Length: 563
Image (cartoon, rainbow, N blue to C red):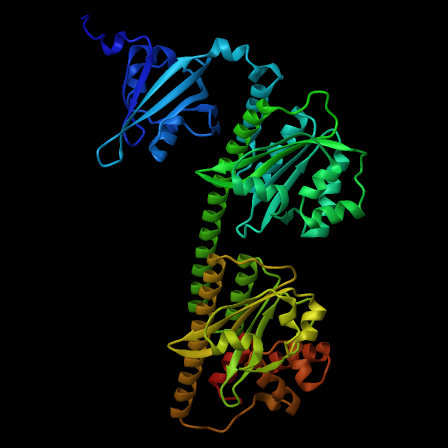
């Protein structure tokens, strides 16, 4: 019997991978096929290979066949992929990734056999249609230049596709609340279809979003492409969501069409379906076929991966901004004894970081157990009424009494508010509240308002809770400093007030209000005079007392016991 041939004498290209997907061995045929130096190939990882994987007998694929074999513990045979050699040339290869299992059932290694099918691929039905591979290359180039932002990526992909392959392109990406999806639409040849989609989204949900239902939901749930080479509009509407069908019935399409070609492929990233990429062709002499699924799937998966990276980046930036805002608040709290200023800074951070329209802080007044407005921002009304609410008043009563975060988006809940006229006037559609607690003591509540529906995630709620903790500490510190000042003042020998230079009774009253920190507008409301009159009296008081500004005036009034 002839001796077994040496590993490197085998004509088939073979590569051996370990359980991590790292290349352990490669024979000479594999080195020649991939055009790589052996020392570069051995030690590299399957997931780092820049292969465009198109399909396997089981259906379209988007990841390296060896990675699939490692995760599934099953062999993958007949996968088709394009590998780019170091010299820039492409080679199409058919891959059989055979998983070798250990007695424990874990994958001990994967042996990948590779066959050069470039000559067959060039003449096969996969390239007879036109520029599927060219479209992939063009779109990926556009994707590389897109900003690292979710909508910018979807916009770049759909816009590029609509120029390369005429039709209406729609990219639907699941929101953090998967019941709705972000939509980007492009149609270079029929721009009126884009406007039609945008108006429809605004009418059904909100600009740029739609409920995740109908065919989109079907593709997401099954994870499989949907190809309808020709379907009548009546049948398509029957398969669509009721909201979409009702909108189309009441709003005629901008172009006349009786049938349409439709292809929808799932957008997949790291094993999960995150959205759907769709093409609708209403005028085509070259109907959609299975070969279009291949290149569209490749684009959809690359888009999904780019979007996921962008979302990770956006989340990281958001967390850094929120950490920075908490640090700024801590510095403001330690540097300023002025509670009003501190609360104003806190509310500004609340609206900026949580992206809400308005916010306020209610403080608990212990004698009568009422919540009184202490600070507010973002309200459209020029003056928010100084309302006082019982602690058990529905909302925020549940948040305060239950000492938990309360978030409400149902419009019916707002009718129960004692402040329903405020909600109606301001147009608020969403509300949230968090109790202000420090050292086990309830101090009040932080409320947020928004004029559209809110879908807060856990990070949003946690940050609201953190801002509430900062506000509670600021309020507690202010109360402690006030008690200390009163205690120190009580220990000092009393002496009769001595207003300087015979200030009038009105000027003494204004001086007292200045010391309390009131603005000219607030003083005017207290003494029932105009703001201009108050400005005149303030200038007179500064001149008579020889002080330079309100801060100097307040300091000397306290130091010399003028009041």
